[in-house]
Image (tube, rainbow, N blue to C red; front, side, top):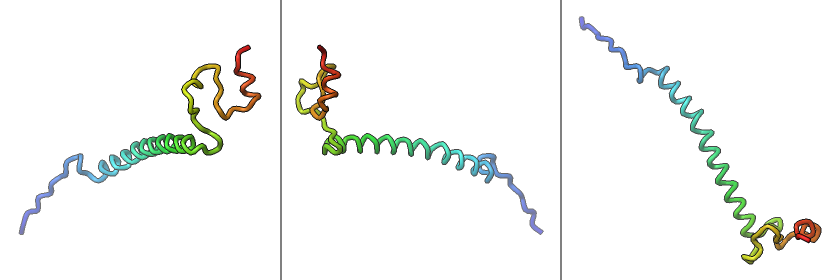
Length: 86
């Protein structure tokens, strides 16, 4: 007759604790990764739109157009009238 010794596992190896740690890690990590990917996606899409001039968006080619009173090159005449000082 052999005497079986039951060994109690440490608290950090019990199934309940491990399942709680796993679910908590997933619920905290995935939204963070999702937010980072959405942010980079928006930046990438914005750069593509501006680079290729989609939807009539483009960066001004001249450095003189940077400032408070200068209008972008694709601005309408009505918009230019509203921002030009008199």
